[in-house]
Length: 488
Figure 1 (cartoon, rainbow, N blue to C red):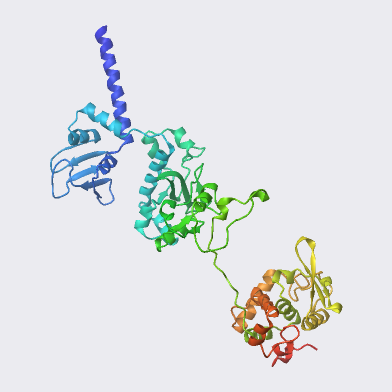
Figure 2: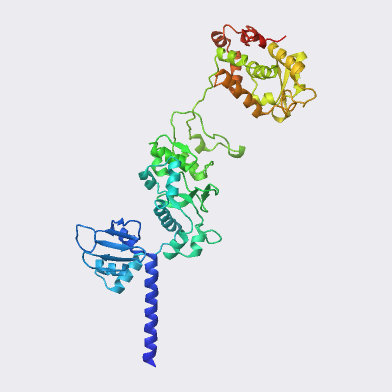
């Protein structure tokens, strides 16, 4: 009876060892172990085999073959072969049980989130070269430098393979789901996405996935996305280029702008803001960024007052007088001339012109009520030329009956309805093509009102078309040589 009991015990121990060996082989493949030992190999065609120099003896020509599918090796030079445990026995000169203990120690699974994300990022990085559509997408986004792709550890998530890979290494389903690598259905969270690891302090804190298919473009894992991207490399520069997206950042790095960083979105979180405020960037620029009181109460934040942002200045160059005269003379109807006149002579913006109603034009008083914010109006004196244009338009061209809008459509099924912004853009586009003045747009025309504030500037550039009392362009001068433009 005692011998029977000992035999059963022995069988159970053997079964337990067999299960441990099986799990160990699933967790640590032979090829991964060899690569950890700095073994270099090349794949054989498109099969599951790799070949390289034998690590068990000295040789000049590669004869050491590894079959990834079977997880076995064989050397045609020394005649040795077997599995992972056999290789450890031969290379380390250990017994079977000593080899098991050694591999158990080497493959001990870290359970912290950074280690799991590190393995997931490594897996995604290995998948990138296997999927041409992922490389094609990177080229379409302007990212072509293989060394930069490797430096940023960009990978690809095909979907459906990460769960199998990590669970085979011994990670539990609950852990992967808690980290967000698996969704509530137990499938891979990232599917057909380019993967960027987000690092902080040398550890991966999150993964960003950019879809290459029709799915929602942006996706992060649950939790913090960390600080500014690649901040450890950028913080040494005196000036910083801050962009929103990771592809913008990567392309800038590719072209040599290594002082660029990325906020991973349109908003700065508290940690990213502190990184920018930790040192004064863009010295010499006086404009403060967000130097205000938080929520309108208390003192200004001290960190905000130290942050300086370089803002490029953009000045609108107005059209020349000849260009304005040519553009003006291309219009045929009094409605169009009145619209351009309000922009050019009164300085109104296109949105203000389109919002005018018929009752806002007080032509007998030469006044115009311009609607503003909060249902408020401002009174604007009209130039005599503008009054003539409006009277001619209202008397001869404006349909009756029509809407309460001042400027309405004159033709087509929309005749009598308020003129839209799209209609105004089409009008200007047509006359830009007709005159060849490509810079003529409503905003540029409205900036010509600045001549009223500097008469000397106006007179020097427009000596032949001025009204000395107010600096307005004279309608007769603008319409010289175009009798059809004169009003009755």
